[in-house]
Length: 478
Image (cartoon, rainbow, N blue to C red; front, side):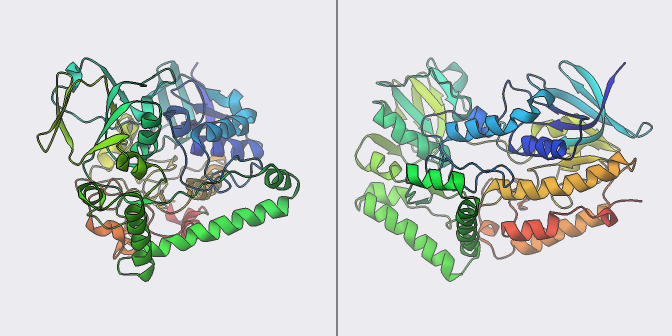
């Protein structure tokens, strides 16, 4: 007999853990979490490359209902975030089925439930929640000769702790956030590093600092003080959204700060010119670093200011025609598949797959519900990322929305969002996007085929909660 559960959550990252914890707090014992890997943590379980860290303050990068008092530094390293998520998830670990990949899910209209196939068996669920995130599937470029490279090829999201590149000749492909964090660490370890840069990133000072023992002790015993610190950080991050509007004085000030950072750390000349971005600041993800520019300026790492176009034996061939020969390893800091999660092709609603519904780019009412997919909700999906603030803020608002829906489903209602409600929401997102820095450049925030903003929420965290944090049954078919 096929197992049946009330709620099936796919993914045990920040969103999946958070939802499972909140459902448990409401007394739900009919929940299962399916996780394809062997541990919780999502992005922070997968990414263990040297230097991996968060660019959001630690006291914001945590659940509001499960604060951590003893963060080591203002900006937490990946390992500390992973330990936090593992500790917080402890009460619901018995609900998580590890090493279990979903291979298909189909809506059963007659039974008003989802039939879910995994590589370990089948189950059904009244409510299906996709919490797979957007930083789960590495983007691996299709490059001539890459498969025949005689050395090691590794994506930053598939790094293994035993990988030692000290003294090796290494090509790092890409210059986004992962590369900016990794390159100085490789150089410090004695690797001979060449960075192949397709486009220069905007880099702002990181200004990290350790919390003192006294500060951590006070956070632990004084809840009001810790909450005030979080509120102060939240307000400062929210203020940063003003710098995402084209023509704003805040955008000009942010640009000037980034240029000053470059000019202070890299002498005038060809290298500084190559590191000066051409796109507007904020169009792509802004990076934080105090040691990336110095690594290049000192010669500890070398910049090739053009993209990798081919691999010829042990040589990397750049778009400029320059070759980097005798490589021992190629590190792909090339980001993730963000336009739509691969699982979308395996989820079948009333009239086709989720991938087909998103053929013109991801879209969802309240960033969680898709017409044609009853009793299905997506966390951390369409228009659910922030460029200026913590992912936890949006995810918690979405969880509140799903909890409201889950209660209706528990009472036997089938929830399918009206297509008109989804269309109106998507139109509002598009209207909010007008005049913002993302509107005129090529970045992973936008769908490649349509140019529509599909990843970011074009507003503040508070505006997302105000619009999407509560379930509205009126948007769903009767």
